Amino acid sequence: MAASPTLRRRRLARQLLRLREEAGLTAKQAAAKAKQLAPEKSWFEAKITRIETRKILRVRDADLQVLLDVYEVSDPAEREAYRKLAREASKSGWWFGYRDILGSGTYIDLETEASLIRTYEILSIPGLLQTEDYARAMIRAGGVTDEEEVERRVEVRVMRQHLLSRSDAPRLWAIIDASAFHKLPPSLAADQIQHLIAVQRPSLRVQVLPDEVGPHAGMDGAFVILDFPDDPSVVYAEQTGGSGLLVEDPEQITLYETVLDHVQAAALSVEESRAWMQRCLEKLD
Image (tube, rainbow, N blue to C red):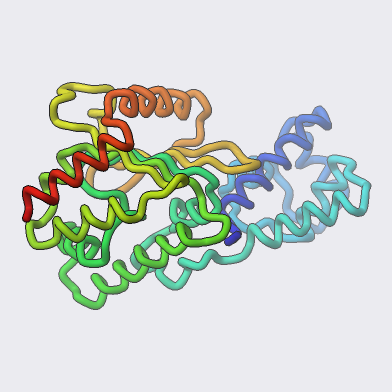
């Protein structure tokens, strides 16, 4: 499985927060003790907080060992496990070479290690299920005019899709509003719909939310829920302008899961969705 540095950072921050709380220390008290153990270093309450909230992306080994001393973690194997986690969190993801077009790459990085991806799309086909030609058309429609950048973005999208062919591929459940099919470019519609039909298997399912449903719970916007084997889920919600919001608050995630449950219940079944897409192909012919 491809390792996600972002997921490792989340885990390290969460575990260091847990250690501090189990030690019965406030961030200010932890910083004071760290300063006593390592007077040559700059330790302040804000530094502890920044580490725990991942504002500091790379925790230096020397700083980590001081914190482990502060929290009285003495077992060599346990200390080494934390050090290994910090080293993995400091690495760069596969997407690092594309950071000029991806920015932080946080979502893509997390996607690489998800065990279940639940996605709901309103106006477009999910990125993991797009054909190259459709992806290219969508990128151009988003205002990218430089052809070299277009091709690099298509390359990233194709590389993301490789995770679906891994031996440890995540399960994918996609619910796509019928509006996304209506907006398919006529010259690309048949290939894209055929791809959606062909790619399905027990671990990859597509449901269509038909026009007949009318107003429904998911009208506020598209989103993706990423679930992990040993870490809390996250939600990526699309926003105006193509940007996205990463949601980690458990209560907010529960809200998104409830919306998805309602949308899934309103959508056609997997079998009905396949037949719906097949009828779309027949109309195109």
